[in-house]
Length: 75
Image 1 (cartoon, rainbow, N blue to C red):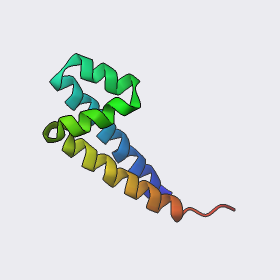
Image 2: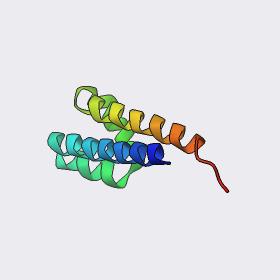
Image 3: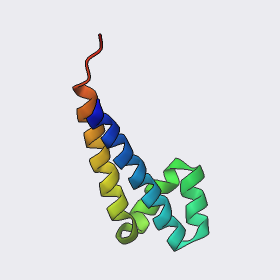
């Protein structure tokens, strides 16, 4: 269960990092990524150099979240 929480925290930090990267490019990108989910994907594709580190951080967090969730047993 702890692994899932760590993965969730890493995933959230990556999401915040993605919003920061969008804000550094333009306030419009920040607002679009904050309010519209497809805009984040478009931002990732168009601004790969700025968004790749937060993306990989989110990916690592998602992997940990899935692994931690699979090891969780319900009573």
